[in-house]
Image 1: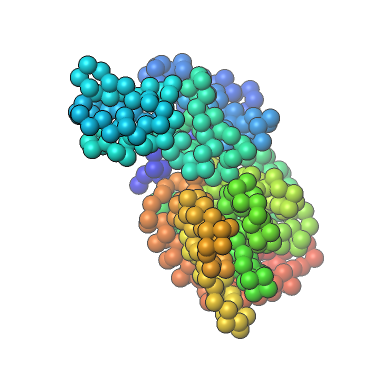
Image 2 (image 1 turned 120 degrees about the horizontal axis):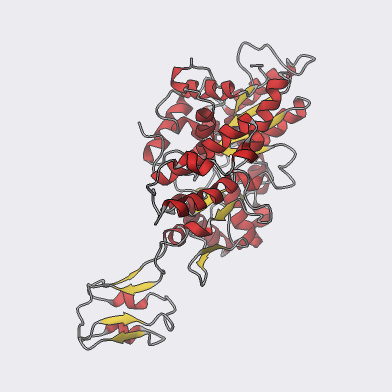
Length: 496
């Protein structure tokens, strides 16, 4: 079974895998010049004009895999040498133009940018065109199309533009680090900075000192990934890497659902706090709604705070589908609780960097969150969980939720609310289509991911949110003097 959707993802994975292999060996800096040849050993180029340019691009990809440009605060970066194959965007007249007599395109153009040859076939003067699209709307042959670059088309908040040299440019003042451009770029010219090297350093340090407590917090969308193996084998693989504990972020989601429900009961209107890209979008585009953002941490930060406040010296690595999480951990409110974030793509590279075949491992059980905590991974799950938490509180309040599937849905819901044209009292924002199951750091995407997450949710032993929270608290109460517990249930503090 294919592990990735695209060959671009596979090439990025190979870079991450080789960087990880040398990081484990401790010879990364000495081997930088050799890694491109290890990835492309032959003389035949994979995508570009020649193998030498391919290897030059690989050097830039290696730098991003090692943390990227420290002067760029964004975790999403453009690899300039790789960004040279896409045609200029904007409206273009295709060969479908019949040179008709009506010339409706000419009549509606506010800048008179339409010009015609001797056969009356149209073309567009790019120096005059303002890309309003009116000509395309009236053309009876649909001969005028808007040929946006894939990255520009993917970025629904218009944070990407093209520079004079043809290279894409990301406006950090607009970007919300969702990674949509990265996933859609067909040349791998946009990538996310990786924390894979410092994570390996943490795991190597634990091998030298097994008493170190390094927690892997896994997003519930993991149930939709690594389809070639069983979930329990993926968990076993994470432990095999050297993590002392593996914990469900869904336990944090249960905590968030309970707390966010109480906040909604008190305030009457909230926007969700779980998706960092959505929260960032509100700050940048709807400042008047910032006071309505839930004051809760995200599930990742919530469970991580719980762990760090309970276990002295604990270190936390979040594993999930989200590139925006790499920006979230830079926030003052989150930085103390989460040390690093890696994606599912990077987790696959970690497995293979030390030749862990997860299909050959025995299954291990993940901690027990509730059904409602686990379905946070897909659009609509958070709203369902908040309604359930309110019911468990004994409150009859009706949640009039708008569950936004993608950032365009988010914009519509927020705009209507800001203008007083919506009676919604809860806006659940998911920047990625489908929710976290559609995150840019996923191995694979598609409708089946939602199905797998729902199935995973139904496997939960704890049937209510409160049961899941209570079981976490019971495990904490049982903590022994060394900060660990021998709970047979497999609670979040169980030692590996």
